[in-house]
Image 1 (cartoon, rainbow, N blue to C red):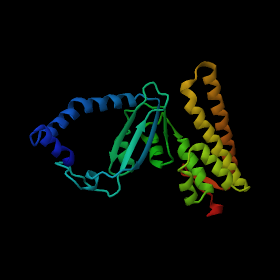
Image 2: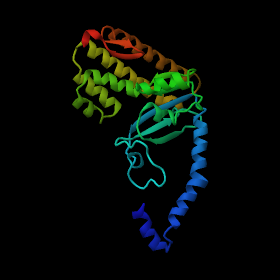
Image 3: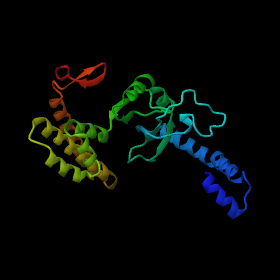
Length: 255
């Protein structure tokens, strides 16, 4: 901020505090009401998407100029929580919240009881299941297909191959997978799942262009593909994973 404000003060002959006061007014008069309006809309979304990623926040690390706010337990690794609507929502939106950590309490601070979603879509992080049980028992938790697809790839590829394939477009990834996957039954089944999910993602992208009968056919095709994914996964999970305390883990025979 200092690098930007210093030349502006010279060019426009501004006082030392002018820019900072103007930014405070911008936040108070425009940005805060806008944020509150988006949050109000988000609370009424029937399908809510949630994810978090590493994002350094100096204040959460106990560094920088935090003013009168003191962080009780500074953390060296911080996160950004993203909440959003689905692509074809009536009012598409996205919200981003910096968090000290990605523990349950940090996420609950933003994903409060005030939300009225019927479905929460996220990765397999257990905190979201806990939030559903304690704060939103009427809602259902659904897995994000992109995250699910990544987990399937992890089952059959090395870390290096994952890095390489992550740089490619969806169609290029599928071509590369066909070259990497052997005739092993498990790998072939996983490839079928990845290809089916890729088709579902492409069908979802077309939804906005369709209406009437074509839209209904598109939705039916997605359902058929998802049924195929469920059938394959139910077959290959036997003696490979088991449910323990509502969480899937490696089957005892493979430990």
